[in-house]
Amino acid sequence: MFHRIQSVLAVLGVLALSPPVGAQPAEGYVSGADGVRLYYRVIGHGGDTAIVLHGGPGLSMGVTWPDLEPLADRLTIVLYDQRGAGRSQLLKDSTRLRAADHVRDLEALRQHFRLTRMTLIGQSWGAGLAILYAGEHPEHVKRMLLVGPMPPTAALYALRIRKLAERDSASGKMVAELIGELPWAVDPAQICRRLFTVYFTAYFADRASAAHMRADPCDVPPDALRNFPFVSDVTMRSLGGWDFTPVLRRLQMPVLVVDGAQSFATADGMHALAGALPNGRLLLIPEAGHYPQIEQPGRFFPPVEAFLHGVWPVDATVEGHRGNE
Image (cartoon, rainbow, N blue to C red):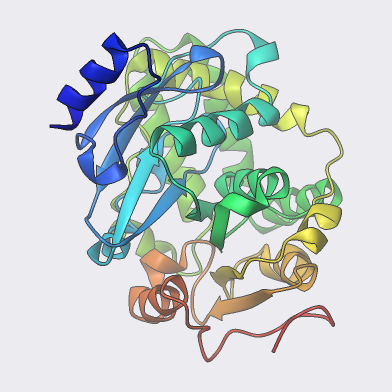
């Protein structure tokens, strides 16, 4: 019926809107900013819609999903591969891979799905993208869940990298070498799996927990894997010496920052990020590192699901003097 109405409107010369989320196919392509093709998936049938922003930059939804899959039990989840990566259109032009381009893509996605207000769930770099988007379009963001987010400043990010190098210099060196091999690899999937085996285990409090990870960032076309280092480098450089603090201080929507209590990044970035938010709280998951949803799912999902349905978790703390009790 909707498509018939669209056809009639088109004949009459009236602009036809895209169908709402519930009318969308489970997967497909949508036009992002500048017509860039973005691959998406829709999962779940809940009343509220949340867009999940994967880590990277330059990776795919496979780095975040399906380890957050329980969230689809009561929400409609929209996933998409960001430009230049995964099954979306691959780009080689550095002027089209800036952080600002990713923000414009997210706005195009919102318009396509006809979402007036939406929940944003961002992990790592995806949390940074959520912050940048909310800074430009706060009226369209209902709430944000930031899981293991990137640090709010370039200085804290540099400190995080140094701490990781001190904690495991051999792993850091191997990751750098494998990233350097990816663009020229005959079998990039093999290089990718070696890379992320090393990378992920360095981020867990208990490295044996990495065996429980369901995500597979390497299950994408070979050319997308080869393009990953380029997209990552260009997008991160476009941020310059970033400081999200002024943006964070303007955001009024509820924001929950979640990380593992034993994450090497926690003390440096998470308190600073949550403390800058007028309506933000910090939840640290005991006995977990950078991926608490994998290491401690029983402690992660109940409070996170409560927040996504409007209730602050009991153990979430207000940081600094800006939080609202």
